[in-house]
Image (tube, rainbow, N blue to C red; front, side):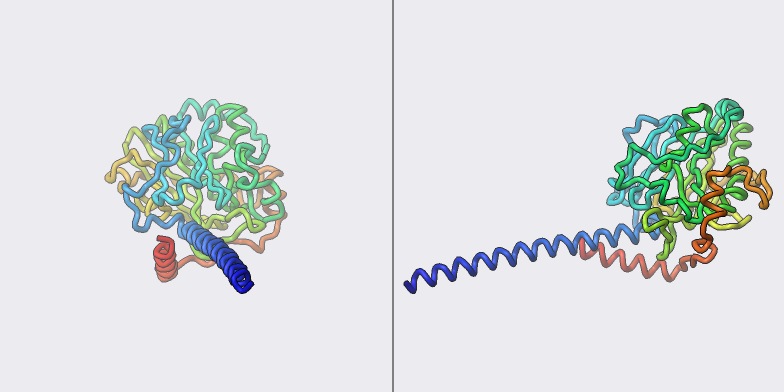
Length: 349
């Protein structure tokens, strides 16, 4: 009898031990997942790891087997310099542009076009249709929704502009939310409109240009629309002129402003942590071409460019999310977050 009781007790203890081991295993998995999520979140705050510690050996190609190489210099799509982030990016090809879409920010990280004089003349007579729509090729859990932008105080800002599109299908494609970021209404309709227009003028003059447009998310307090779509702190437009073999980029804050910078591609690469034009050499990436001064076509007291679709969600929306109140990240804050990322990396590895 004692032997049976002892055996029963041993079995019960082993069962409890197995349950505790299983519980510990799941707890460990949960902790590692949380740490990985935190790392990914901070990487996004830093502009996708800000390129820190990145090298060609660690880089991951996005869309290297793309069906739309025509939008990239020598057919080479942008590369995410942090290989751990690359699997999250989805390359979407459209009629006249391609985007690298992030399910984390629910925005494009970049939108690429190949503008030509001929395509812009074809686009000139097309009427803007304002057919904003959700991108059905993306899983519903990853895509941004029309409701995300509703009453947000931000415009649905095109990365590849509708005015660049040379056909009705391309025009419709440009209104996919996969091509949109939350943009300050005044920025979208004035300074940014001037940058888009100046880019088209330059393309007509040069004959053709490769363009990559996108957002940056810099800082530890990036806003989100309804807790889902991340609001960029900055916007950029890269312009590569094949006839000159040189490249530069416009860089602006995502707020009401008339100020902008023209920076080298290398500077932007270090900030964003993305090699936007991997086919170019280091000399080209460090050079700068003179870009035309943006001249907005609409005065600040009118909204004729944006149309009623964006007006209803911009000017009539809440303005309490203005990025002019969002603090910039100082160098010390960058160092603090980078230090935290290194600690998290050691925990995972």
